[in-house]
Image (tube, rainbow, N blue to C red; front, top):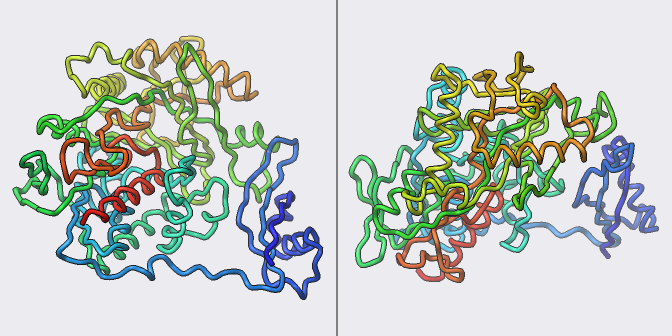
Length: 518
């Protein structure tokens, strides 16, 4: 018989496997001889009290063995070469769509404009150290998509969209630690996720799928409101029975191509703001009431949200023990994002702090039609680049307290952002409606999180790629484009996901529906 028990332990107790087993058996009230296994299936941190506790949910198996999970990949069979689906984009939406197609015997042809995940790292170094932006290989573009080198956080609220457990199990089967199956806020880390992505690629190829890099799509093969394939920048035409468009939220050229070729696109609200970076020990002290923190506790995080003038102001993609990274996808713009390594051992904690924006904000760009939100986003990024004054990737920055007092910072605290920062009054960069709400929201955060408002914190501009500024409309049942047959918009770029797991779920769902038509 299986019993489920809840334990509340100190970090030291929770780290002691033998102690956890003993406490779980005591909760059930059974002798050790009768217990076949104690399995932890949920772990979270409760820091509401003065002393943090670890909450564990355990399954205690009495007089029976725990079930053995059959690997999902063991059920894959070689794909049918006569059934071909082109997938544009090798991010989580694209790769998990490919895995799902293989599961149904269909051949995925994955095309990515960027480089393979290992080679891509050279271009990340180039933008970090030299300020050189490769438009096809950067923190947003390349194998694995934007999530590969911007943290690998796997938390999602998309529980109704599909099997999160299946996504996590597939990641484990490709090399991720089993901790992601247990932790309430699972995380892989940028130093490890790229290896998982590499293994997924090999699984796709091993079962008959194809993965092509430096494969930049510049046109679609369309006839009679149906897509038949794509055209690459070298003139190569590739055909298939269907095309899954999984390009990610920064593929502005693809959005423009859709408009040019008469494929329906809609504007979509997104969020805009900055990265705010604190010393990690300060956040630990606020959240855990410890300085230094217990070494058995992970770097602490936070989640903040409020309403200001009918708009949400909220923290986004919080990276404890993390780094701020340059995420521009073209020369002449500055965009920042956050990431953490698996150990989350940086002395800094950063989080996007953003304001929801909608059609009222980009009204001055309405002459761009359905791409008005995109152009508004791009204008802010160009203004941020121009503000640093030297054409580099140094980011405009301001002490948090100076921002609220509306004065230029005479000095800036140390930062994790490798290209460096330059003191700039951010009131001259961000749109006024965003600025006003950001100021009011930060003051509210300071009231709810004592110690948050400090001169030790620095604001770094601009956090603008929170989600796609467009949506490519599709049928709610079939996931096919509302007008172009055979085209399946998918993932973050199409406006249907917001993170690694939700994008992977969307990729699986799209591929499942598509497989039923071939």
